[in-house]
Image (cartoon, rainbow over the protein chains, first blue to last red):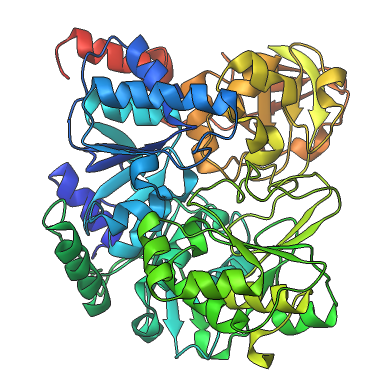
Length: 426
Length: 164
């Protein structure tokens, strides 16, 4: 019996052939913490009596959630990570000087490599599977175990194969594909499993789309999402190597065997998709944009950003739609580039001017608004169209507020219309 | 452990367990003041130390925040029982020492029932309804971690042996 990509990555790390269901203990190539999860890891690390990190170059802290500090408690919390980073002379510590949302920043810096095993104390760590790595979210104590020992234990997951066929039409993006998948299988449809994305449709998806897709596999309960490396991945990596003066390590590229064993196969014809809008209060409540337009949903806020959809491609899509127009009177629009590099690139392309001229406010990179932290909190009963990943009760603010998840084109056109609108009509 | 039951539905996410607006600290006593707030704003004032949460499928879905099991434990929730748990929450609960149990028959348990968990025999006993259930045993490898006193104690032993 052949192997899936995920089984191959674990086999290589375990130095033996493994299959789904086995428990393995393996070394980790990159461990990720952030300003709100790392303090708990540091506490456990110090309690353990460990004096130094098992590996000095596999641990990164990205200060992205409540940074720049939103209040005194956040500043004090951030200090725990800062002090640890300075004390241990951490190679990969990113704060205000080099800001970005972790899952956009690390690939941008060439720190995510195909074939890696990556764990992060952030559930959206699964994003990095877009580059052919095994990448999954864990809690702070598991991260601490990685800091102390250099590795961790895993149950090798069974894999669901998702075959994407056809070419997506205009204004259909990775976001629509993953919302459609979650709509089909539900928020626990992939619990404990890997999802491997394959099919001819993948060749029409750029890295931004693939990152959005891998990013949200956790919303179906998956352990990881993964794409095989192809020429689009390679071009992306070449660019990252050029910009950063090299990649963190040499890529290890794996393809699934033809006779690999999958626990389930799902086929989605992406040429037939309409933009998908996930209604409150679960990411699985996807409806077509036609239905959302018919429901005449007036909105108070539009948020474009996050580890799901805060990339330069999203800013380009949004700018193109709002160019020369004005955000509706009773609506506000917040744009949060996911990294400083994206911010600068957008500025260079004139996108920031376009967005601000249209009435958007552009913020520094942060996870803030997406998780109801700061920089775009919703009040009682307010309704938001967000390019983020979760529309749970109270996720972005008041318990009675509502979040509709959508792609960046739907978000931008909704900001102009003041209600959920179809970008294909503009 | 024995306690009074509070019932919740399917897909109780980590934002409901502890909203991110409180994550500007990881201090357990601060977090414990706000558990289940967006599911039931009165919950903290209604519950008593030792109470047990019985919920539906996929408990703890969403974020990886370990603050969720930390807050539940600190507030005095003695156990969480559900048919399935989200993957990250499942690991975190073990790592934090919050007892969780997988049980298919949660629909037969009602809010206000008193239940007891008999760890040694792998049983959940509904004292109010005089019924007994067997919970799903945890994987063997996780039992080793529990026996070692949790993941960090497991690591401490390796440090002591000079293995790391």
